[in-house]
Image (cartoon, rainbow, N blue to C red):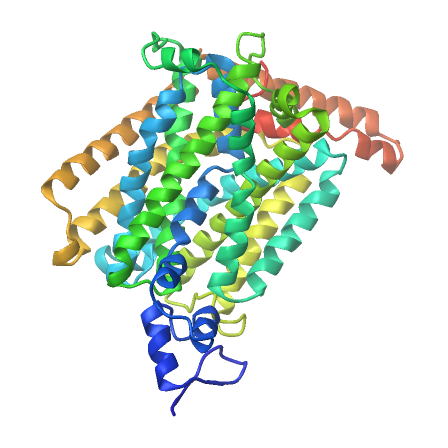
Length: 502
C-alpha cells in the first residue's frame, strides 16, 4: 500500500493503489476530496464518471442568465412581445460554439485562459486580456449586487441587510474548500432560475402568437428595438464566462477522455440558459406587452407580470428566488474568473482544492471582488452612468476576448482537436457578427441625439437634481430620515441596466 498527499495543511490520507486507480478513472485530480471520497466508497466509472464530468458548463451557462440578462429578456417581452423570441433560440448554437472552444483549450492544454494567452502571445497580451476581464467583472458584480438589493426590497429587506448577508454567503461558499463543493452549490443556486420556465408554462402563451413571431415584420429601423437586439446578443457571451469555464475544467482535472461529456455539459447549459431567457420573455410578453408597459423601471414590475398566474405572494417569491439564485451564482462565477485570471497571469497557485494558505493570492482576489461589488452598491446613491458605460465597454471588449480565444484555438490546439476548415469559417462569422453588433450598439448608444443617449442624459439629470434635493433636505436631519431618502434599489437596478423610464 502506498500513500498520496493531498489537501495541504490537513494531513495525509492513505488510499490503496486500487483506489488511486479509481480516482484516476473517475477523472478527478489527486487532491480533489470529492473524487477521493467516491473512490474510497467503491464508486466505479460509468454513469458516475458522466455525472462527475458534468458541471462546469452548466454552472457558467446558468450564470450567464444573471440579473442583467433576466431584466433584458423581460424588457424585450414587455416592449416587443414575442418578436425577439426567435433571437433567443438562434443564439443557442452561437453560445455553444464559443464556449466549446474554452473546454477544448482547457482540457488539451491544462491551462487557464490567461495562462494560455501569456504562454502563447506574451505577457502584454495576457495583461490586456486580464484588464478587459477586470473591467467587465466590475460592472457585472455591481449589477448582481444591485439585483440582490432590489430583490431584498421586494420582500421588505433593506440593502444594508441583504447585500452584506449575500457577500458573507458568497465568501463562505469558497472557504468551504474543494472545487466540487463550490460547483454543486453553484448548480443548486442556478436551479432556482428554472422557476421562470414554470412561470412561462403557467402563463399559457398563445401558440399562434408565438408562431407569428417567426415571420412578423421586424422593426429594424427602430433604435429601441435594435438596442434590445444588441443587448440580447451582447448578453449571450460575457468575457468572464470564457475565463471561468476554461479555469473550471482545469481546476476540476478534466482530461482528453472527458471531452465528449464536457461538450455535452456545455450544450446542455447553452440550451437551458437560453430557454430561461425565452421563458422570461414569454411571461412579460403575455402580461405586459400591449398594455402600455413601456420601459420597465424596477424589478418589482417584472414580478408583477407573474401575479395573474401565481398570485401576489407566489409571484414575488418565484421572482425573488429566480433572480437571487441567478445573481448569487453569477457573483461566484465572475469572482472566480477574475481570481483565476490574475493568479494565472502571475503564475500563482489558484485551485479551489488548495486552502487559503496554499493559494493566498487566489483567495484574496476572490474576497476582494466580492467586497468591491458589495461595497460599491452600498456606498453609491447612483450607479446609472457607471453601469451604462460598462455596458458599452462590454460590447466593445467582447470581440477582443473572442478574437484572442479564436487565435488560441487556431495556434494552440493539438492535432486531434484542431479546428476544421468549416469550424474556422463559422467561428470567424460569429466573431464578425459580435464585432458589428458591439460597435453598432455602442454607436447607437453614444451618438448625440440617439434615443438611448437622450434617455441616459435625462436620467442622469434627474438623478443629479434628486441628489441635490436630498442633500438639501438632509441638512440637519437626524440619521433615520437620511436613511429613508435613499432611492429604492429596485429602481436603481432597472435604471442601471438602461431600462428605466425616460
